[in-house]
Image 1 (cartoon, rainbow, N blue to C red):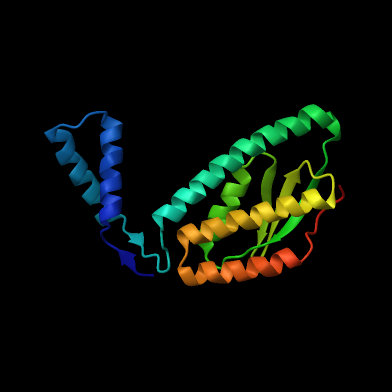
Image 2: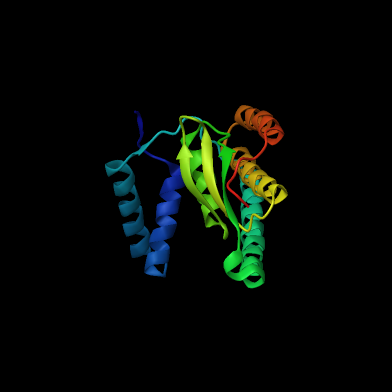
Length: 187
């Protein structure tokens, strides 16, 4: 694995973190920040990440989507608990993993798990399946909706962090996945 010795983006990020840690910017802090940032980058080089793309507008779209989903899911989970109490139903859904890139798979799994009422229990890379626990699933229609939400999140992650070719491949996989019925537990 090749190592990248210097990244201007990481240098600027480390410098900003240094300024935030000290809470001020003066010549001494700038000088020590430059020395520390260079030292970190030279002593601990990051592995190169071929195929890692970041598209700022798509990333912003992903952030807006996740924040909206977090907000809606928090209210929805509260509603389920208040309305159904101890009889809230749940399901474990199998949702296809759409990307072959580890960073996209893990990012999507973490974003799903951040959402109230959903949690990725397991990622089966051999079969290409996320096993997702979903709260408040009382019918096949609600299971399909939760399934589609995870698919939509994966699309947005790949669009923000993947190549145009990978995004097109993922959209094709989504079309196939939406034709397949969602599998889940009893609801």
